[in-house]
Length: 427
Image 1: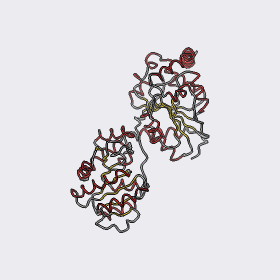
Image 2: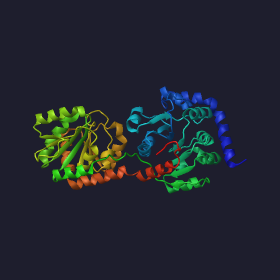
Image 3: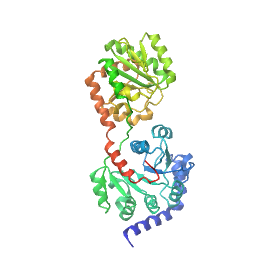
Image 4: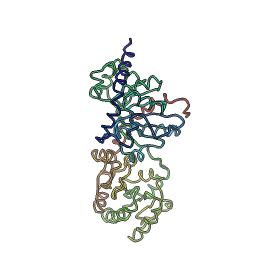
């Protein structure tokens, strides 16, 4: 019997022996809070979701961060093939609302089935994926080999820490080899991991480590150049996606900052276009001279604030402003993604309420690309401090570095996947 056949036999035999224990194991995990009781049936391979028509790419990862690290990959493919559906499975619980808010369109989530034969078969029967992208260091031998038997093309990517990723790598070499051989392509995070995989007699190449990314926002370069000439070197800061309850705070901070920084200009972008009248009223009440973003052919030198009517022009405003305050963070809204601003060269200021993107803000803070404020005076002080060109440039460079950490790995994985997407998905 070949090594591959023996490995598969061991996997299936172990799965049958442990099958009766699945219900008991699942109930115990629910009782301990390790599983979502309302979605525990997904761990049995069952689903409340209907499989969409057309090509479905199945991405498996370990946790929420692993899912977020796939945003750049999914986003690039969606930009060319918007009709494709992505199914992301995770091993551990996630925050559903965060997944829905941060992941690209046509991206579904389900918990991975337990690595038991019946659960795996139900899962594969229901979803019938056209392609599998596995970015979890921990393999699931039953699921991996079952996918291979069905002829599902599979890529194992972002693999790291093989030696410590699970007992199957240390004590069950034949099972590990069989699971690894179920993947057509293996891309590792580093050379040490690639060498460890090769030690199992399986080919592997290095792609680097995936990190969460966002697609760059478009902007009109001609309009940017024209506005830059009109601004004539004025220091500019941006308040983006400002909640209605933050409008007065942002304008108060601008009034204070103008006393510290000569010719300071604010571009304010309410999170909802319906809040534009509220911004105008607040400016008038504070004696602040404003102009709407669609009326900038002749920008009077006395203009203190530009009011943007919608979010469509954010790419332009990020390019023009050296410093950006991201709204929804001085009030309990959970904040907005900072990657768009960091990727386009803005030093970032934010309030304390950034729970929706806490992981990214922490990375930016640690890199020196973002600072937190919690009041109007601290916001005004931060704007005045960061608007100094050298300081803003230093923070912007650090932010760009954070945004680009996983870019090469993302591009390499996307390049591999293009050749594996079924021909039915036309470019």
